[in-house]
Length: 503
Image (tube, rainbow, N blue to C red; front, top):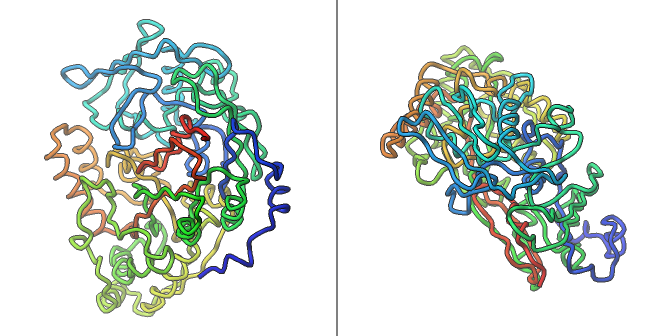
């Protein structure tokens, strides 16, 4: 257990770190803190949660998801599929403007998706949109996507900040990622990496007036220091990742904890392109040797639940029905011997410091568990930006990861588990079954048939064990009790900060 009292900073020291006065702040500015800063400003390229949480306050997609994971308007006010499912037409909000005052038009939408689809961009969500054959812009407020096949999940994919609409002029100028010009509720006025972000309300936001005039975000790597700053009312709102800290919030009379199960999942990623993880039985042995509940209980205080690959409640398979979800060390040893590794092997597992904060503890529990079958695991913790670079290159034997969930299984996994997936370098494994099941699930519109397809997909993925899914947890935010209007969601989005007020 972490002893927090010795790590708490004095109010004066904290005020200096936060760059705010110790007297009460003006009510119109929301003072916020988080422990991990964004790693970049290009909404199409970023994969780190810390980046997405910032960018979704600045940029907007065509549509977004509400707290019930239903698709609702964003830049688009309406959308319609053709009868054959091969055309998707959007009408844009005529009030939508970028933060430089220019109108959001169909030309910006077309340019944004063409940029996402361009392999040179390295867009994180490119694989979600490969069914787009062409894009028409009959007028400034209408966009027609012509699809090569019916694509049921494409609307869900379009709700993500990785599919944000950016100005065509900024694409042409090559300035995406060097400055942030979106159409969302806030403008980025200042970014001091790993220290502070200053956001001001976008007075032209089509979504209406924001509840505050601005948001000042302080980056405090020690979440105990964030809690201390909340105790002294220097921070109004905080995003917390560490369950050790989050579980202390309800003990504070003036603070409120928002805790909601999320679709994101904690996972041990194996690299099946590296020996001996190339061997199916070695991967299966690792799966059998890991006690997922112990990882959850030790690393995250039991704050979550063991999961298979699918985390969407309506589609998830009971993990007890999946391959080797009950720890079986003897079976693991037998599989190792059959693969020719009775004496085990050595490997390195990488993790990011701070995202998630449980990564080091997860690695240590897994190191201990795998030692029982002769796997000698070296743990290498990295700064987040270094980790992300290695992760995107697939430059690891094993990796502790926290990966984002999505409201649709195809949107969630096609980038890893299809032959055209743009993160195949990260997954380093594909077979005909996975690819076929993904394609079937993409084209099928009948909910019952889709559920059966993805249940088979989940069962097969757990059996071939390229990754070892561990658990899902919660998103935690803490706020002063005079803060109103924040709505937590299973995607972990902070978008509802746009309507938060200070009472």
